[in-house]
Image 1 (cartoon, chains in turn brown, orange):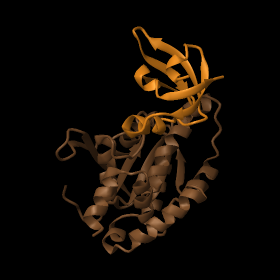
Image 2: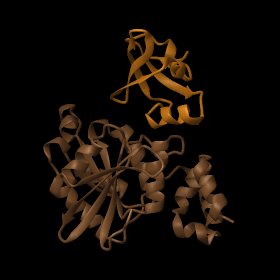
Image 3: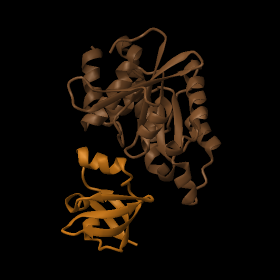
Image 4: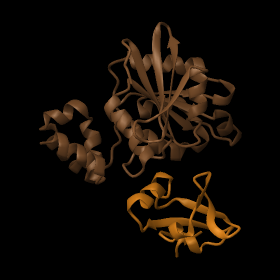
Length: 229
Length: 74
């Protein structure tokens, strides 16, 4: 795809049935383009909207529970984030299913790309009696958290504002999950060794690489073999 | 006992997942972690798959997969 100057690329990620497409449609309206990812028949939906003079291009990633190398959808989502380097990720989270959804949020945050959380289906969460402390969630995830109800168009303005604030702010603090002493010792020493490869640290979050290598992730090992020599 | 042995209506708690690779990872991704509580809702008309309630949401898995989930009844 041709890159236009001044265009800001934002990825939209979320678990299946989190309302990803609803939020995507809410933001882009009818200005959408559907294609396939090159070489595979997984749908790639892109769209854009304008916000205070900026042209924001949204790329709808396949819905995934996680970001491992096991399935094609997950590899596509991950490769896009790794190689296309979007300015931010809008992570659509089903507020009525917070615990399961936050697992993907952690995986996205660890890639080192700034996050905006759209806490979607807030109406369903409320009707189930959930009270979500969005401020505390934002503080712990080091990301903006915007409550939305996609199918009613609620939260659109706030979400656009949060997205703009995120891509305009270059000094975002990466999300960091503490895995406990036993794992952190290994992760830190692995990260230190990865740092010795300048080709690697330019293109990838080393913390993310270290975590994936400890998971014995096949794609991470491939990257290391290619770049790490 | 395994999750596959729990009858509809029964509740249990996950002890361990005895499978790695893709299926094990997917189960973990969906919240099948040690300590998680599961309620078995019903079996499909031909027994497989089985409908479960875990962490407040419904998910259906095959009995062949549920066999790898070691549980204790609640």
